[in-house]
Image (tube, rainbow, N blue to C red; front, side, top):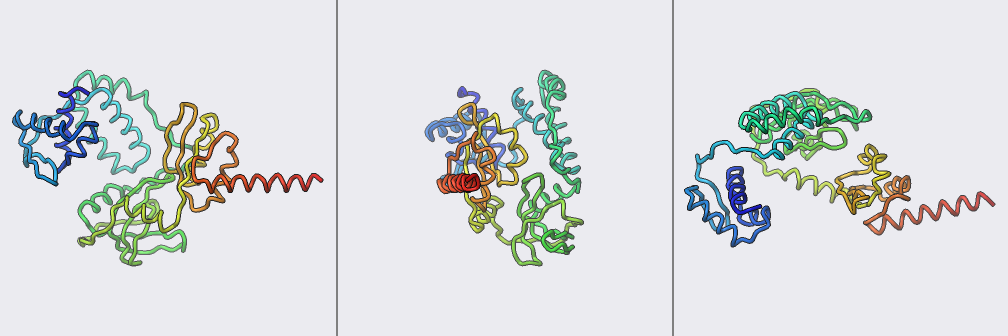
Length: 319
């Protein structure tokens, strides 16, 4: 990226956040702090009202805004791709809001980019796996997100799967995430006086109360990290041959799948969190001849022990 493009990108970054730290700018553009200071000075000399506070960061003077920016072809295509996922994986309220936002984005695109989106629209598709259940169209997601931002207490009627009961609760919402084909809501439950994971498709009725909460709840990321620690889950990293990888597309979610990246061209490196290395070892053996365990060493030992036991058992039966 040349300096002019970088300075423009820094300005966009300043407009997108209330406060931006110099270290964040340096890490994003892989430049030194000295270069950050020089680029910010260039923006100031160009008349951009930047407020800098030592130990805090940079911010733009309240009310300052540039005219709408132009998107690149790659950025415009990325928006279109995201739109396809939103259409398939969210509810009506989220789809409606996203369409409205996309209309505004399209309105500021140059003619060439608008033509590109129209041409690409039929060339990007997202299919649901037939094994995956339909995403429940509750219409609650946007209401929940609004309650999170406003710190508003929600009243819900919820079907608790473990007890097979319908319960009425008041909750303080923290955040939502999508896992294993379902949307989850993490919230502080006033009925149970503790944090709970609510599957949104099991919420039978939801309403916004006039109550607000001021409790300092953990962030969603911190809550999930703490939950993993309390449940003593083990991190597993395996490398799978691309030839067998397609067969794991649905099964992986039942084994604690977290993320994946390409490795060495012919392999996919997959990360899992599991509460049972024994159970994971037995699942791994289904395709272990075309995979490699990166960590932990204990998982390798379990696979070896199961394999040796299997060989001994079959050898004894053959005699």
